[in-house]
Length: 66
Image (cartoon, rainbow, N blue to C red; front, side, top):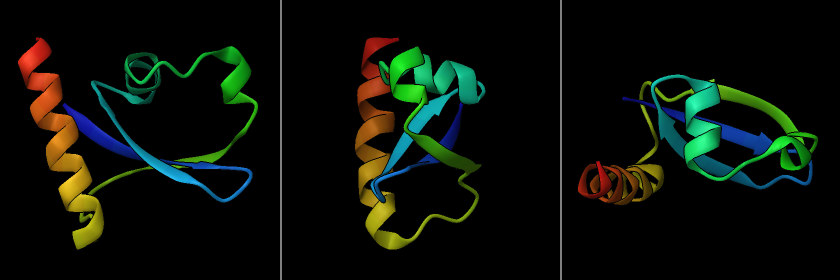
């Protein structure tokens, strides 16, 4: 699985995981309405340490549910 940082128009960012960006948004519950608030996304290759903790938690939760 890959990790992506999505950047929303109001400045918030969120890390989502999935096989691709579409799958990651679906898994995170981001639907068509919320996609309108998406400014841009990027694949996480070397996350900042603050993001690593969040990413570890997400990956652990993802692995527990699959």
